[in-house]
Amino acid sequence: MSEENSPASESAPHKRRVRYSGRNPRRFEDKYKEHAQDAETIAKIVASGKTPAGTHRPIMVAEILEALVPAPGEIAVDCTLGYGGHAQEILAMILPGGKLLGLDHDPIELPKTEARLHAAGFGADVFTAHRSNFGGLPQVLAASEISGVDMILADLGVSSMQIDDPSRGFSVKQDGPLDMRMNPQRGQPVSAFLQKVKADTLASMLMEYSDEPKAVQIGAALAGKTFNTTHELATAIRANLPFVAKEDAHLHVRRVFQALRIAVNDEFSALETFLRNLPACLKPGGRVAILTFHSGEDRRVKKAFASGYREGIYSMVTHDVIRPTAEEQRDNPRSQSAKLRWAKRAG
Ligand SMILES: C[S@@+](CC[C@H](N)C(=O)[O-])C[C@H]1O[C@@H](n2cnc3c(N)ncnc32)[C@H](O)[C@@H]1O
Image 1 (cartoon, rainbow, N blue to C red):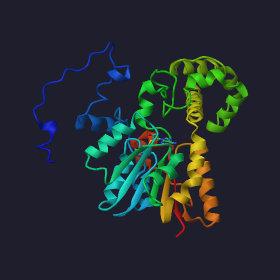
Image 2: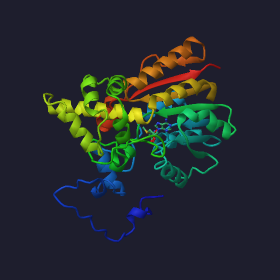
Image 3: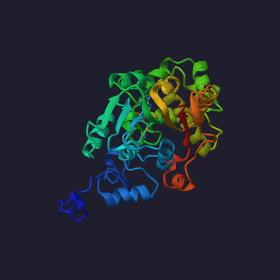
Image 4: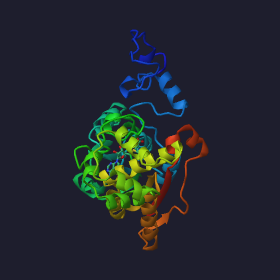
């Protein structure tokens, strides 16, 4: 569609800006600018290094495509569909004749992404969405009568839609119910988890899941307590670190949030199951690319690829981890901790 014919250029009725108290919008729902749908506002938000609300900016797209080398007619799986940014790029390269299966366990965002990709012209013949944990990939493939695929992508962790929506309870910045489940229909929210967990178990999790140096002290302060909102928890963590500088305290808060998110979503079990199942899901010569965001994830991927290579399961694996370019890290600060590893199934 040319720009002259685009819906945005038609004389749209004037929309009043949403009113809020104070100089700047504080609540997510009030950030009308970030919810803006017009291309100009979205471009401005992206240029300022932010992610427009309700969207996700795909990370290391060029590097992932280089690792997966999608070609027309191939079958691809995106195990972490999210907003569908990577999926859309892969789809463009596997058509005609190819097919992409998108998995995600988030029941809130998955239907939106499915509808968006169908509306973008990727019909059910080339794109199907599957609500599943990626630990269940073999079952999804079996149900689709697919015995092996040409490429698999996993972009681990949470999407910007999840982090930025305070009602999901991931946000340190915006107050919300202390939940942090990517699939709120399973497991328990962080608030319930903290009420039941023992101090030493929590301390071990803080050490193992986010390398938190004050794990014992913070574990003892939080275990068995009741925190209903993300701000209540962040305030309690800071209160427990009275001699720590403000910026450093913020890092402790972020590490604790990360560890709790990993715990309630059982992220390492899912990743380990996925890594174990991977070779059987790939055709001979099939490629896998995994984007990780912290050391606990990267360690597991590195180890699985290295042992698969030694055993002759993979014919090639990344020698060195691949990082986002300095330009991408500057343009999208959320890419800063990303690490990419890939492997190729032996033929
Ligand atoms: C970083 S985002 C992916 C963004 C996506 N690549 C894009 O371009 O929009 C991670 C997504 O993976 C999903 N996810 C995380 N762990 C999962 C798991 N074990 N099984 C299925 N989906 C998972 C999350 O719900 C989230 O939507």
